[in-house]
Length: 307
Image (cartoon, rainbow, N blue to C red; front, side, top):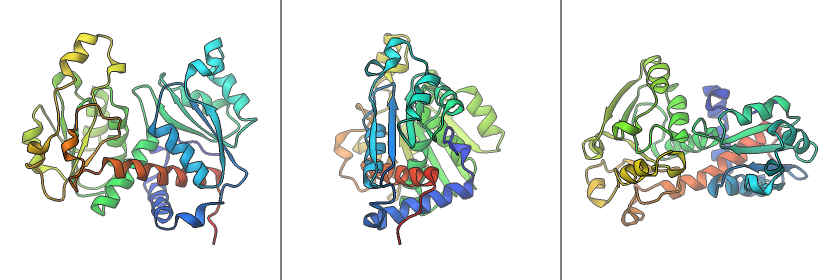
């Protein structure tokens, strides 16, 4: 039995196979409609979520399975003080696989150690978000045709953004990847990412404050919101929340084949005026998330596709 807790739990070769399966699902969706007949997915979401939770549920339903679970800690026995380890022991009696989001870093790891079913980390605090990373990898590969020889701009909240941390960890395994890290000083990537991931893997990167200066060099721009829920001080949030807003004027500085990604939800960091630009790929990215999660569920349950 395997779990997915970290983007690096799958090797590069295993990741490529999973992305190939997701691509085949995209191209041939009907032939996958019964591969999980009789299987149940439990969604254990201790934090609010729209895209991640519903895309997991859509993925399982697309595969012919069914779903059960809760969408907030308040609607579960966690409100009564039940531990994660006890919850997962019980859920293992009801479902075949589970996806867990939790505000505490490491909670999915605790669950995996006590689980009788595969556990998928659907986001733990400011730590990891591996299924968003798989979605991002599929998006980049589908849009650019490759996962190497790319300059990736990461913009916004690079300190607390678990999607950013996970994506950096995954992309450093590919050849000739270069990062431009665009943020105010208060929201720069944590030191461990800079030292233990980027420098340790000899990855070229630049840190800068200006989105305008970075735009002409980028193959992919990955925007993130400044996350109010990660701040201890509301004054700091208000001061920083509008520091980077992508609009039509800034987009004119970019290459014609540069694509804009965003894990969503957005607040105001991407102006709605660019939604119709062919380089705005964030809603397509959300669709790729369903295909990736279908492929992941199939892989962890070890079910075969129909002929």
